[in-house]
Amino acid sequence: MNATAAIVNEVGGDYEFEDLKLADLGHDEVLVRIVASGICHSDESIRTGTVPVPTPAVLGHEGSGIIEQVGGAVKGFEVGDHVVLAYTYCGMCANCRSGQPSSCVKYNELNMSGRREDGSAMFTKSDGTPVSSLSLQGSFSTRSVVPVNNLTKVDKDIDLRLLGPLGCGFLTGSGAVIHGLRPETGSSVAVFGTGAVGLAAMMAAVIEGCSTIIAVDIHDSRLELAAELGATHTINSRTESLDERIDELTGGAGVDYAVDTTGVPAVMKSALNVVATGGSFAPVSASGKPLEFVPVSDLIFPKRNIIGVFMGNSVPQIAITQLIRHYREGRFPIDRLVRFFDFGNISQAVESSLSGEVVKPILVMDPSYRPA
Image: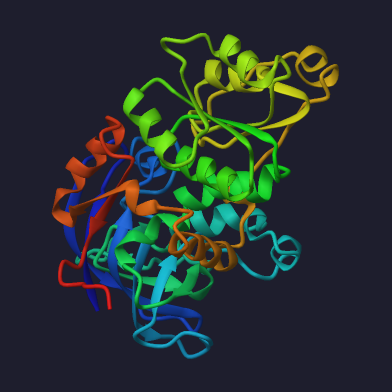
């Protein structure tokens, strides 16, 4: 079986379309016809070398599609099922078995090496060159061979094109609040950065019943959207005093919880500084930039917590299903955040994300697809 994929042949290289050969199915794998894939900032970090993945590589880790073949040991899935693809995990280690697959001891090996555990590749060039597959889904492709642990089955009546970002960006943001910070009903939350991850976190705060939800950004258009989606207050930190506004909104106490999605050191420090005594801060950006603080004054005396949250601390098969239910109920309106692009316009879609023009670009690999 062959597939057309957008390949990064070298670090910093542009996307190039090539026809690739797909590996034969393993016993616990499925062949998925990719309908659509979200574009995540992590893809750009990998393309530019900030996060290492062996090249040549097929990136993309927010895919959605339809199963075309199943391996001999696969249970619970069949040809024709609609699925969302997330990260993969071993399913056997202590972390996986205790309900923490995002902490799988083999996470890096399985998701970042671009190879199966036996070292074989899912994609191969016509000359035999192996091609890495990000998160063993490589969703910037028209087809992909994917481990069953990546999959979440979804109903066929919902637009499959919308759902891919539930596997990473929307999962990360919402999970940072729901599974990471775990805010009490009536508590206050500040979200720094109102891109896809930040808006997902903000909408999750609405779902969790937070009474004061503050969106912080430097773009008024993003803040207007945040207000429409449930932010009770917005702050443009470029034109307003962040500390003064937070003091005004919280009676000088600070917020109970803060989430940073920017990865900018100065912004992360500002987010930590506005957390109330006994409150918690979750930095969730994968930028890799340092956060500097003085433990005695920033953590110990105010009894603040910094919480590590990865992939929303979520079990994809549970969290994605829950987020779809919230979407159906009108409480997680992801359709307000996306714009569709033809697969061939991948470079334009990436630029629209980097410029901030589009919150979440989604590539459509199968233009013939129509929701049931």
